[in-house]
Amino acid sequence: MIAFWIAAAGLSAATAGLVLRGAARARPVDDAQTRLEPHRRRLAEVERLAMDGLLAQDDLKAARAEAGRGLLAAADQSESWGRSGKAARIGVVASIGAVCVGALGLYVYVGKPGLPDQPYLQRVAEWKASDPSTLDPARIAAVLESVVAERPKDVEPLVFLAKARAAAGDLAGAEAALRRAVRVAPKRADIWSLLGETFVMEAKGEVGADAKLAFREALKIEPNELRSRYYLARGRIAEGDLAGGLADWRTLRDGLPATDPSRLALTREIDQAQAAGGLPGAPAAEENPEVQNMVAGMVQGLAARLAQAPDDADGWVRLVRAYAVLGDVAKRDAALAEASVRFKDQPKVIAALRQAADTPAQSNLNVKP
Image 1 (cartoon, rainbow, N blue to C red):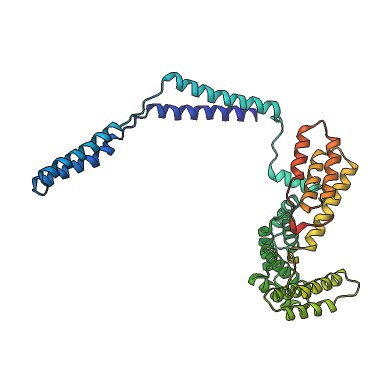
Image 2: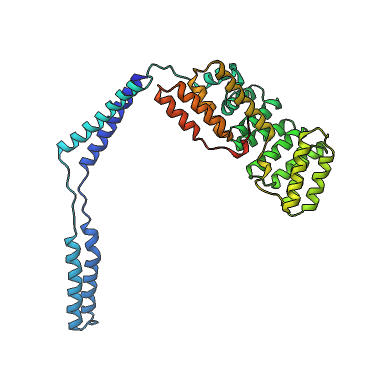
């Protein structure tokens, strides 16, 4: 690794030297001819008009004087850029070399030149062998991508990959995974409805044409598919058909068991929509219970692991960042305070913790883990 940086520094210095040498050999810039040419043409035009008898003597003198003044003014503006001395060029090259050497020395002092390379595939293999509760959604998605590559005809890894990508904030990646999943298993209503919900999340709660198409495909396969019925009714309300949408929601609610928590939540949403004359507040379509539960479980697992092994600085940074993303300010601040006390003598860790605490919350993952 050190040899690489030495070679890189040498190459940079050589490149800078070649550039400076080329600049030193450049010819001085003189654009006088360009500026003078229009005035010369003007003076020649005046003389031609005089020869044709089209200018009176007084007008000819005035035109000659005006053209001459313009020509002299343009000639006075002529500039040439000189060359710098050899000593200046040597100084510039020496400065660049000193910066390269200084950068290399700084890396040796504060970096980890002896740290072995970590190929991406090797890291994915390590994540795959580790406890899933210790991984963030992005790493889980990377592991699932390797599983999908190994089992391209298996739809389940694609579904889990879509959920992991959604949890990591990659809705476009989640959509791509679900599109592949419906091609592998076109008769799975749950996959069609997940694809429709992903379209809704990408559209910030709007039930658009693509989402409706996906939901209707799901209902062709399974007419009582709950997610599709919920969102299609929501789309009717958003388009102004309040009575029709609420009727669909009530039918959906009445078919749910009395002990189902979704029944109470849907009843509350029906009351709010009826009172507001439409969809109130922030769109509930951004909420994805399956993604929220998966993220909450991973964060709880990480917190439990840190309770057993509290000296993992990277783990504390991930935990603080996770609480910040989830919008759980109380737990974020508590974890930040505990980690700050534990690592008070490590300024780099403290800086990483504070940066993690400043991570913006994601509204579609705003849950209490």
